[in-house]
Image (cartoon, helix red, strand yellow):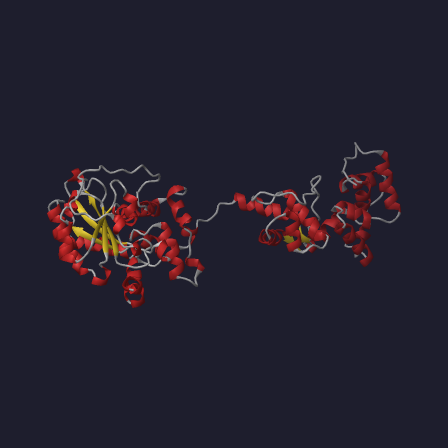
Length: 456
């Protein structure tokens, strides 16, 4: 049943007859116009033309409770405000005022056929059709859980939707749709920009060269009861990839291992690799080193500087990721490396000197002398097999943040290298449940049972 208001020049004569019939029955001019399906102005014009003065008795009329009940019953059954006003015998204006005062939202007109039970929905926002179906189900007495099942949606999705579209008259699909449209249109505040304390903490950790993922998970460990201090690593990455802006974008880029938006193929020139006398193959390395359960097994390599004229030695403990850097002041010959290792390795607790795995570079030609001086057995990888030293390769990638390719590495003295190693050892690691290598090493050294398997 639809009502269309018409001007006085294009309405059928029957509408005029309905108007005057309603006036004769005692209705006001507004109510009579509503019943005739014309505007209040058209009804007033007809009345003036017929010499009928405005009846002031109807202004401010207090309608009996039965009229109100008839009006609201029609509204709840799905009638529009105009239709409910006609049924109750009041003017459209009166019906509008009642609806506004009550904060009532009429039922949403169904958009054609909306039967969708049993149809598998993709993981996408609710459609207007689904919202209309949800309104029908709730009107029929369904609770949120069964309604979610009928719509093949997650319960939490339906709960959020009901809260979004709830009115004093119940859930309304068009209110929920309007809310969803507004949410899509409005500019979203960026979490880091709207939380200055969190931003300052993220920036401080990025300045320590922690990666966005390390920052995100470590914040949850350091602030377990304060969700305001939590942020996803994706949000931090978006400061660079999606929403580049100022200082934060620069710091995020600095914290990325490669310093680039996209990866490039990495390669190394295989120089100085050859057969090393008396070397022991990795296959003979103790099996305990393989699963990282027992600490004390190390991996090592060199990172090479500009023109392959300088280098830094890197040692990484497999279980904890703890890093030790070797200062090679003049060159990267076997003698220079042997001397540096003979000085540095004895600083490592003896219980942690179980093995060292290296590649077949000529810089390790004096490996037997290193073992004699330090008591550290050395094992060698297969040629061109860097994955057999995966922990060390990963760490060397981190070190390139501090020592970019093409840098003269002889510039960096022992103190500088110790400082870089300390920073790396203070970075939270995902595989350590976001503890730092230094924390993990201290925990293992304080627990003698950690080393029982190695001596059994």
